[in-house]
Length: 340
Image 1 (cartoon, one colour):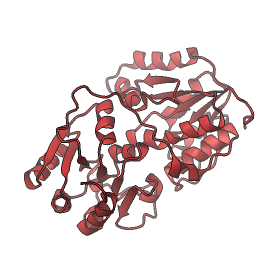
Image 2 (cartoon, helix red, strand yellow):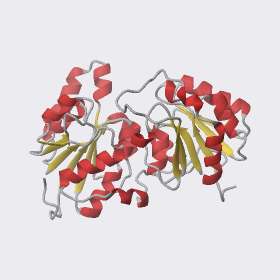
Image 3 (tube, helix red, strand yellow):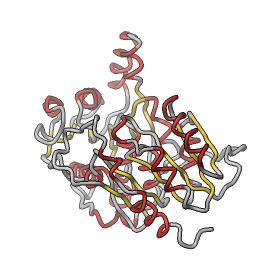
Image 4 (cartoon, one colour):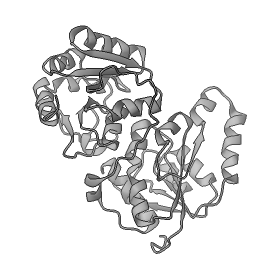
């Protein structure tokens, strides 16, 4: 464990993907800076997600690594060259792997540092990754993801990071303002009907029933042809709906950051709202809100049932449809109180 009295420390954080997981890791930045104000913090990330980290004042350098695209397109020379170049980057006092996958462990090990720290083999999905760390820590896999990240960083740096600070956190996602913001009416609720797999998608008809009861402007976003069809179905039945699709990450941050409320399933934009201190309502099934979300006074969730197995997700489940429209609407009324 490192000496907490060190005032200047060079820290490399490895969290390669995905959008929501990176957001869950980012609160550690401001907590580290409060304890080690002069720390240099660099972040290693998959190239497609680097814009998510852009503009954060607590990150000194962002190193993007094109792992997925290089492997998918069989650009093996480019892939191995990028890994080899990790050794040429400056030397760090410590590397912290907040991902816990084999790919992130390999990246962490190749970075120039004598201390590579991560979760132990009983704490992660890919136990083999833990063999690449110099120091490893057991943190129960079922523990809330955000708390897991804070615990690991606390262990790695030898500093006392507390969870209560999460309720008072500063926003940590920032964007460059667009000259031509695409939303015509700035007073809007952002609706995120899509998700990475079907069982996380709340039925469009139920979404329509909720939104039809709310006197507000809506922006519905999509990121695939299938999600576009859902967005168009909602627009056809609900007044004052604008559809936006295939936004880059800077634009997505801006759209989320200017919303009065965000409603959606367990997806990146929902977690981005939490990271920007924007009111939100998460609709969870079959994933666990207890593990994947951190509730605050303005960030609420609804879950149809308790999840007992956090490592196995039923991607064919239809349970999300059991969540009532009234349960969502009641939370909307509370969070929109004072807005017109």
